Length: 141
Image 1 (cartoon, rainbow, N blue to C red):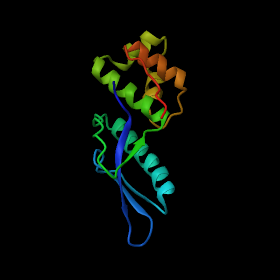
Image 2 (cartoon, rainbow, N blue to C red):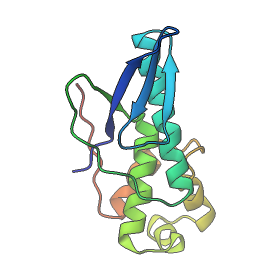
Image 3 (cartoon, rainbow, N blue to C red):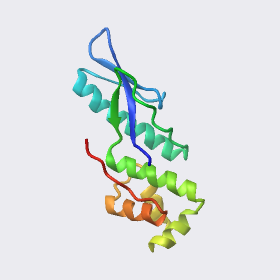
């Protein structure tokens, strides 16, 4: 089972607020004025880091275990589904046209599903994942 939440370190900024970094995404750095703001910014920053890796067709790192003092930042649902679809398609070895055939959609629609900045419906992403043999599951904390 793949988890889409990552450990974040919040470091107090001498000028106020916090600087947020991720061990698994060294390119993802953000900041916030307070704890709540910092965690919200962390979620947005993490989402953009994942979007960049999807765009570059790079693998996502497996989430590291949480160390003491770190915060677990979940990837927003839509982006997590896009990341899962991107990884599942790469693992399957199928071309986008082949996935499209399985779904009864053209390659253009599959490209939109894989575009991290395109607003694809959750149901559509779920169907695409199922066509690749993956079953998305939601866990609430």
